[in-house]
Length: 356
Ligand SMILES: *Cc1c(COP(=O)(O)O)cnc(C)c1O
Image 1: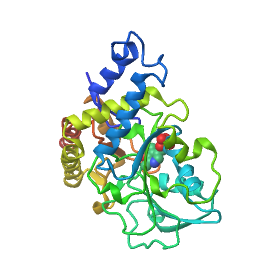
Image 2 (image 1 turned 180 degrees about the vertical axis):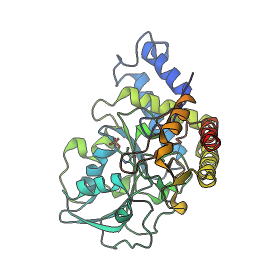
Image 3 (image 1 turned 90 degrees about the vertical axis):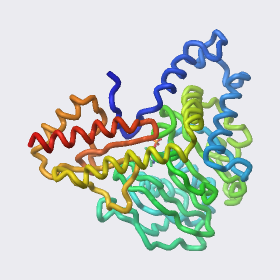
Image 4 (image 1 turned 45 degrees about the horizontal axis):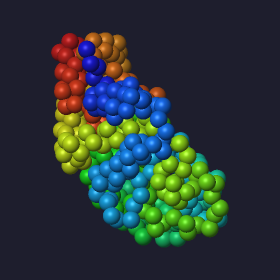
C-alpha cells in the first residue's frame, strides 16, 4: 500500500517523478546509458539543465525579467553564506527577519561577513508567529527573510515594500503559491521540500544586483561564476536536477502554481478546520500566520498520544511527529501530497475523538 507521506523533507514527490527518474537511471532517453554514467556536458544532459533553468523561471513568471536560475550544491545552508559573500559590502550591514530556526541559522553565517541587524524576531514566543511592524534600514545591503518556517508552521502572507534588495529562503514553499516573484532579488530553495531529491539548491538571482559589493569571492561561492558557467561551473548534481525537472514538468502540465495553490489551500483548510473543531487537538501557530505547507498541532492531553499514534500508523500515515523544538505533530502538505491523504488524517482525528 502506498503510504500517506507527511515527512517535512526529504518528502513526497509526484509518483510519476519517481517512475520516470528510476527509468532514466536504467536507460536515459533511450540512449542505452544510465543518466548516472553520462557526461554532464553531453547534449542530452545540457538540454536537461537548460530546460530546468528555463522552466523554473517560467513557472515563477520571471522569464525575460533579468533573472537567472541556477542549480547549485550545498543545500539551502550554503546559501546562508553565499548571500552575504555576494551582496554584503566589506564592513557592511544586512537586515534579517528572525522568524525561526532556519532564519537564525542564516543570521549566524552572515555574521562572518559583517553586521546583521535583526529587524524583528519571534524567538521569545518559540517562533509561533511572523514578526510584524518592523522596518528595514535604508542603508542595509539587503533584507533577508524566510517565507515559510518549516519547523514552526508559520508562513509570511505579505512581504515588506523596501528599496533594499530582498533575499528570501523559500525552501519549503517555493512553487506552492502565487506571489509577485519579481519583488525578490534572490530566492533560494533546497530541492528536497517541494521540488526534488536532496542534493541541489535552486537559486534565482536578479543579475543586476551582483558584482557590487567589492569583495573578491572564491569561485565556487561566486554567483557570477555559476551564471557564466550556465550552472555547470563544476559537475552539477545530475540526478537531483533531472528529478527536479520532472517535478517542474508535472507542475506545468497540471496548471502551474495557480492550480496547485488551489489544492494546497483546500488541503490546509481541511486540516486546520479539524484541528480547530476537534476538542482533542490545538494548533501551535498564530492563526493568521499558519502555513499551508506545514501544519503543527498538539494533543490537548498527552495521555492520548499512544492511541492516536497507533491509529495514524495503522491508516498508512508516516512522517507525522513534530520537530523536537515544537513537539506534538507536524503535517507537511507539500505540492505532491494529494487531498485524499489529508482526508485520511482528518478521519483518524475523528476516530480518536469517537474512541476516547
Ligand atoms: C530545510 C530547510 C533549510 C535547510 O536546507 P538544506 O538544504 O538542508 O541546507 C533551510 N531553510 C528552510 C526554510 C528549510 O526548510
